[in-house]
Length: 246
Image (cartoon, rainbow, N blue to C red):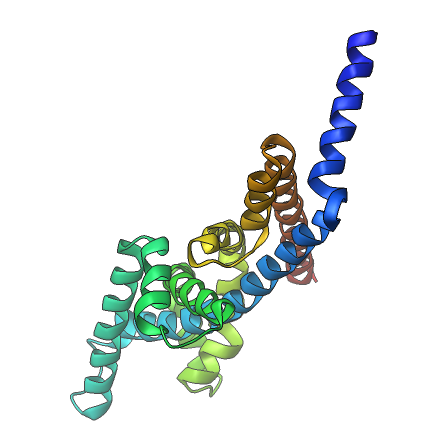
């Protein structure tokens, strides 16, 4: 009993030093806000790039050989080659190296570290999102495209109203995994001096010489965010399934 009382008193002292003293909990809260902000905007950038690249690649894979020679086929071929190179480079190099390149080379004149992180993570995520959506589009039977054409839709309308809605339902679980990976990847932003959640916990560890509590708090923060994101995606997936039944 005496040992438990001493352990509890020691925990209270360490908790006070790590989070209450000098309002260090605010540092964690600010770091959490930065993490969420980077993840949100990088997610938007990744979705926009990924969907565009997926449409280019899937269009070439489905219709490239059947297209008549001309400037449209040439333009699509060039766009497809650029897309392949982009996906290969982004997936073939570490995201940390890409982040450092953005910070020390591409946007070296910028003082906005959050912008650097959003660009690095968004463009990197776009490559993975592109392959996810391309797989989803290619999984839709080609008869769906022919059905859209028979209804008088052009190719863009067919993709918008028939193919993409079905592809989104198919890739939603995989897309959720990519969102979770993106959220956790932001933990390396400390390499460019950005005080996101992980860096905030590490700063507290360095100031207090107490490792367990701040790092455990960081781990709990990421776990809670992942659980909430998984729950939201699951709810969306169930709603989409319900719409299919109707």
